[in-house]
Length: 345
Ligand code: TXA
Ligand code: MG
Image 1 (tube, rainbow, N blue to C red):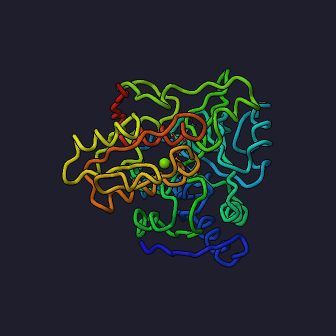
Image 2 (image 1 turned 135 degrees about the horizontal axis):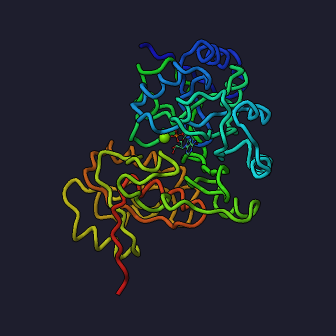
Image 3 (image 1 turned 135 degrees about the vertical axis):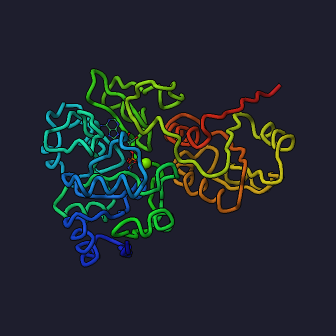
């Protein structure tokens, strides 16, 4: 199919926004920018269009989608009940990079939720995303706009690389600010539970909700056949072609490890400012103590590693506090959970 590409700099680009909205209203699928990563959107009540998202991405059918809204009241037709915790979180963090899992209404098709009785809802803060949702008059089901298994795209160039010819439209709204996907919190159980960390941190969620559990799948590999709360967490994800190993150590030990283990096609994934110390090709992903910059850079860095032809990659290990938890969660999956721990003697 031919993919129409629209440059949309701001929500004032009403003509292009109306065209993308029209495509969605007519059952098409379109990639749109959000503040986290690009999403591949379809009208959430249109079963055929949602099925086409799964086909375009090559996404496993048991992995549910997030439904995006632009106004709080739109949540009412998506959920069967709305706990106080959801209202509190919405007031504090919406619009923004937070997704809430809630009991679904009958109106949400099972193809969106992959058969689950809960639905994921998010109100993005990106003005172009909000404008497209409003212009379409629809809640939009949208996973990240990458081919399944590849890093989520944080700019339109990578969306085009993955999806050109497979979707009806791509709205190019420039770079995404956060760079990792939204924090996913389930409010469907007794205690709120973080299923996927993001730039809205566990600490921030606890400060408004009190007790919040972090699901064990955030930092560990699910056992084969185990039931997981968030199906997305069980797949090998965000993976470049290169085989990544995370090296949890000091900078000195990391460099020693590289000197002992690197081969011709090894590259380093290190922090800003460490380039000049690296004895081989390297890609950087933010400052060592700057979780936001790491989040912003990580997925681009993973794609750049492919572009420079890296076959094996030794990665510096991020902190797992604050936003770092989101960075570590993604990098762990990109590395298929390979971590080498080296401690100073
Ligand atoms: O920032 C984001 O969340 C981006 C932008 C486009 O909004 N979207 C995104 O979608 O990352 P996706 O499909 O790549 O990730 C959605 C995650 C998956 O891990 C999925 O398993 C989980 O949310 N999820 C969706 N519905 C769920 C449900 N009902 N119960 C548990 N997990 C759910
Ligand atoms: Mg995704």
